[in-house]
Length: 559
Image 1 (tube, rainbow, N blue to C red):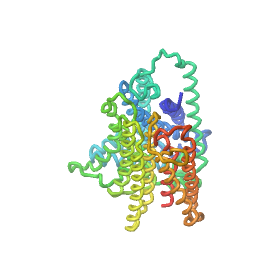
Image 2 (spheres, rainbow, N blue to C red):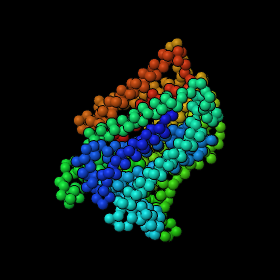
Image 3 (cartoon, rainbow, N blue to C red):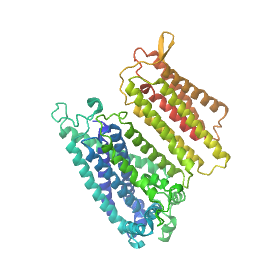
Image 4 (cartoon, rainbow, N blue to C red):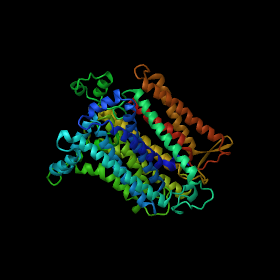
């Protein structure tokens, strides 16, 4: 009875809320003039704004929780025999969910919807050539403008129905195989393949599981509505987070409606961008060096379409067939652990990159952004594999890993200086932020993998301090944290202008606190080393990862 084991129920609860609010919205929808219908809905109909915005945020919650559900099961090896079909059905369900949500976004008829349709049509046309691209665009969006929203509504409802059938298939296969036993019970092994149903400690489905599912579902609904309320109160922060349609003032004026200030503000602050769950693909389509004229017949973006829409789900789908081992531990299957982790990191990077900037990027910039997580994740995972197989912590490997991070970080600084000297474009700071984000995410992912190594006790190099033997790795962590603490304090006292750069000053102040927090953690461990024996560096690293991630975020803010 933990959220980790019930992530699928969170996805299903969000889908149920989507179905209920979507059916109610059908009573108000007008395909011949969706813009005015939705404006009237959010401004004049009782609970109209609640219905429309809750439907939107339920879609956000369903897709986000589905992504977390996917990567949790990847990390736990839940795709292994006999759950291959459950895994593949889940991937298909996720793909249809994204398509359903895209058509739902397009139904609103606002500025974002029109731009999403234009972007989607352009991507399809460029990917499949002048003939087949036009055919596929006509199937989805129709050719005549007057029929466009009728076609979109039909596609949305058909996709939603197919999504419901795939949900039933996924749940039916899941019920047939049962949930994967916890790794504490199996010792990270594939067997036993399912939880024995004759165990005396299993709670009955009714009323225990029923009550748990009911209160969990209500909690999910309440959380979605709460986030919706906060977003409405916050006003316009970013178009990807904005809960209301982006109405075009000119079209409201044509209909005899004077647009209020919040409509004008939102319209002025938006730019062409698809829904957040497709921003990663939108960004890949901005990588100009990937365009080619396939066979000379105009399939200029087919490679980009494959990289963004086909390769990621296909890679996940083949995991059960390439990883046939008995162990489910992430370090016993480093290939899927590395590939799955990098796909997650790249997805987040591309999404933030697309949200922060628009435009084409050089091969060197893209290579640097993608190589940083690759270096950190590959080196970190194989260092942990060696530590797990040898049964003792690799202090030298940890020190080398930290040196690698420092070198990579200095590499970023050198790239910034070079690009700045050559005349930095407007997207420079977005590029830097995405690089730092990738470095922080890859460090965090390695830390999560490290936490999966069980405490079995081991020996390590130590230094004598007083009457205590202190592991060298702890001393290294203390030195790094002390360096960050002193540097942050000096920058805060002598360099930063808290009036001109309040965000930077706040970030540095937080780093002073966190640097002291990291040093005190090592002091605490030094005094408790006999009471709480040291096992290996992976168990001590998580508190310090917060310091290092904060340092990277602070550097991004300052730069």
